[in-house]
Amino acid sequence: MNSSTGNEALTVTRQTFTARQLRRLRRIVLSAARRAGLSAQRSGQLVLAVNEAATNAIKHAGGRGLVEVLQDNGNRLIAVVSDHGPGLPARVALHRPGLEATGGRGLWLMNEVCDRVEVSSDAGGTRVRLEMSLSA
Image (spheres, rainbow, N blue to C red):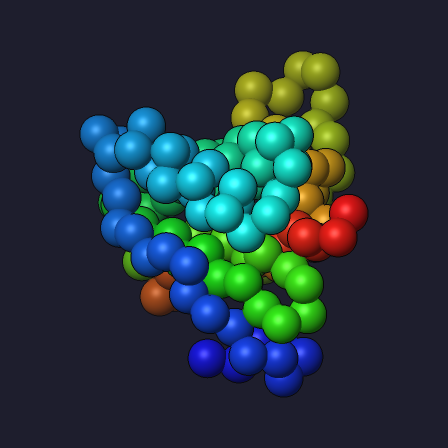
């Protein structure tokens, strides 16, 4: 598999999930992050971001999804959370919602803790790509 920069990417783990499997999913992502060399703090941040994306898939996209964790030669760990839900609106905000907002903090939080966040969505589902530099 090639990443967008042309570097080879190796799949570290691939896991489907449902709401009942979130705890297990968090442990799997944490283990993959630590094996790849992320610090304890950065590993926890990746777990938090993956949990937010997975929770969104469960809540808004039929209750299930897929997480792939990849490590590329460009010194990055990449987690991709995908689902087969109805997709997101064309414009998804990654800024912090106001205090009165009852939701919308998940994508903002992912953007705060990860080095890069890409969200793509269409009628076939949503894909959230979360990147963490291994050298940071």
